[in-house]
Amino acid sequence: MSIGKINIYVCNKCGRINVSDLGKYISKLRCCACFGKLSYVSVGEARDYVTEPKYRSVFPEFIKILEKRMEQGFKEYGDKSFERAPKELLNEIEEEVVDICGWGLILYTKLQALQKKVEG
Ligand SMILES: [Zn+2]
Image (cartoon, rainbow, N blue to C red):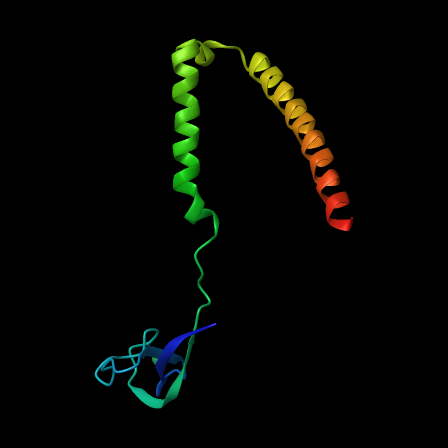
């Protein structure tokens, strides 16, 4: 995806391509690799190669939800969970995994019913 125009320069010394935002005065700047003088080549499209990972947009909300759950756990059990043995924590995780599968099965039946309605 193009995110605007850029000026393209080539280094007279090493041949490396250098770019700048359109309108930015670069003629006095030097090559970012070897500090050689730059020659203007043309205007080009700046492409969005560096994109923000999707998880970052939902991460703050996820952290808030996690903190709320941790706070809820603290109110119910205090900090006792931090004293539990790793084996006990593994058992808790195992139970949660089974629960997730159960919830998944229930959701699956609901989706099946919705699909039957859509198909008529
Ligand atoms: Zn150079």
